[in-house]
Image 1: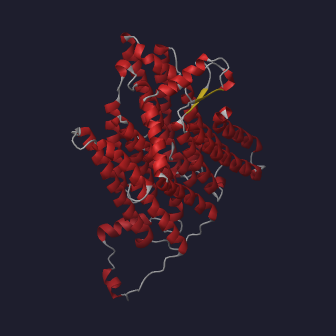
Image 2 (image 1 turned 180 degrees about the vertical axis):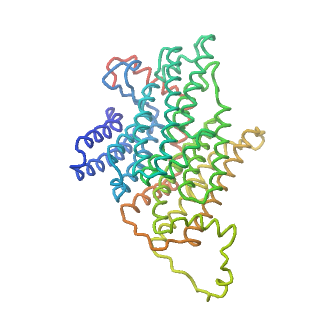
Image 3 (image 1 turned 120 degrees about the vertical axis):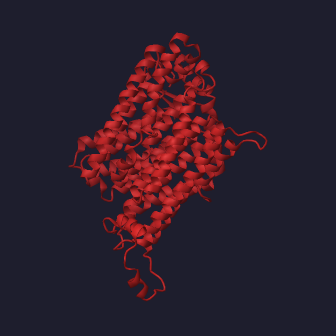
Length: 530
């Protein structure tokens, strides 16, 4: 079972390489291989979740190289959770793409596999340089997916996305170089063990290198003001590409969560807590910016992109709060929001299919200035009701579920996640609450309100004010993935107790990383350890 840790990286890597060799001549085989790969990742993720539900940290050393020099994969509760989210979202996006999107441009299938490989590698690696390598694999594939299908808007947004991420990659490499020059290691566990003993003369430079690297993480997490590229890029991408790209911002949040708590937690010596106020402030500003963005847009795709900003800001602010219970609630929120955002991006194209171009602009015009036909409408006979086609009703139910999850309203898991964060922030009844916590509490509540207002307004426009001119034709390949993601959101609600226990255990191990350090550094001391 120890070799299972490497499967999430090896399977998509081999599948993508085989797809490149096959080319367009064997499209049926390429599709079958892609479906086999994504299904295998789901099965593997389930097995790894079961393995992770315990205190043991599983270490896998590729090529049997020593931990300090080779590629080491570290599997714990947090990485298992992220692998499961990638696998489920990847399967849903891949199945949706089979309806028609995989034929909209060249090389979709190998790009998709390399995207999964980069994501899984980033969540498993225990080394900062290999984190950079997997970041680049993930980003290189995402550039192709963001541009997949061409089009002026897609190319313009994609080029902005590429430039921003190239700058972030440069900062990441500079930060890694500084850290290695000062500490002599890039293994995260080894670096954490050395943090307390760093010489006073070198500590400031080491912190500066980590801060530069942290800026790269925050750019990938789309923190304000570095996340201006995200809504336009996701709005322009195809539906399956946008769905899988929606988790890329969570990679930045994951890196911050992993590295910051490992290096600047309670065992960080004089560097303990370094950057915490910046994370909290950046998260709060990102929530505010995302909330304004959802209220300012009438476009469904941009609304979904702005919702990604709110979710990223919420995660960063929760990390900056530096409380185990808040981090546990944030992990629950992470799972719920990834499922909801993935479903929403897959729904958007189905909802807009059949609507007249510019329907959103016309809706804004009607709201602001009226139509000028009020007298004619008053003279028309009243209708007893308007028949809603079954497929429109199904899409409406899916949209409602997404709205409830993203706004954090009961009874779904989005509400439970926000409640799990709010309770520890309020603290005991007799304890004073710091001003920063009050601001975070207000941000969590008001961002949910802003999302609710925006979703209700857009929903009214899509389903009543300017409904589809023709009934959209939706295939089962497009509808089933949305049902899968929303069904998992409902399952997360029903199984909230064991899921929350898992998240709290993951949060506790992040804030007290003794088991992580013992697992990695213990493997370094055992020759031939798997």
